[in-house]
Image 1 (cartoon, helix red, strand yellow):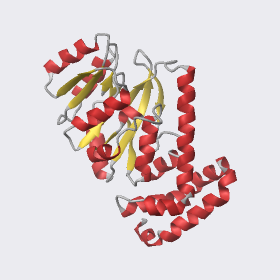
Image 2 (cartoon, rainbow, N blue to C red):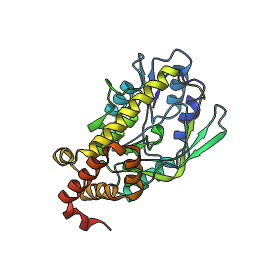
Image 3 (cartoon, rainbow, N blue to C red):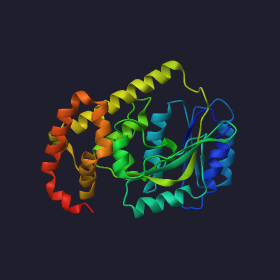
Image 4 (cartoon, helix red, strand yellow):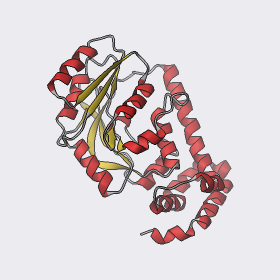
Amino acid sequence: MSVFNGEIYVEQAVNSILEQSYKNYELIIINDGSTDRTSIILDQLSKLDNRIKVYHSENKGLIRQLNFAITVAKGIWIARMDADDVSEKYRLEKQLKYLIGEELDLCGSWYAVIDKKGATIDKIETPVTHIDITCALVRRCPFAHGSVMGRAEIFQKFSYCEDKFTSVEDLYLWQRMSMAGVRMGNVPEYLFKYRDHGASFSKSKIKKMTDEALILCQAKISYLKQAQDIMRGYTPISNSSRVDHIYYLLSTRSFNALLCKYSQHKLSILKAMLIFIKNNLKYVRHVK
């Protein structure tokens, strides 16, 4: 967790982790140069529970602080949490069970959207399977960033990019992981509450986020079109990763949407699909 001037909600966010049914963890909190009472609150909380590890820092921004937190984390799993959100009591326990049971490297969950007072204003069902998440990455982010939990080695290998796509750092990270064969999922339960502050972004910030997300989604399309490049640079974690991609290329729902939205690339996308499947026919036997 990284926090900057979060005195209003940070204690509630921390307590939602301390009250988890799963107890074997360390809670790393980076105070990113806060100028309000955040420092005092964090120091008080750390005295109450020795699982809390607080690092006070000058203001460096979310991305750099998240990368620092990854380097000091000691566990084999890393879970994200934002300083104004809330995790349900069984979040960590259920995500860990899901990661192991489904043989995944990373997962989030469905989530509720709450307002400043904590009232639920919406509920979001994110795509659940690795295949659907791969499809979703073509057009949007399939996770609530603060809900994600994954293998520490995956976060250490990729980390957050500090010099480009800084307004959509999570989408860029998930796409890079996806293209390297990292297996992803979402627990189909509401285990996380994301706080919506209303007009919390300026118009320029929203434009930057939209522009960068569009570039990334177009890059994902390019990844699917250039099948030969996929084969040269693609190192799957398991055979099932390739099978999932074959499924994706054969998915009527995802491909119809893809071809409709990018009709000018229809032939090259179809050609890439055929090349990819031809080069991976031996993996089809793994499809259940």
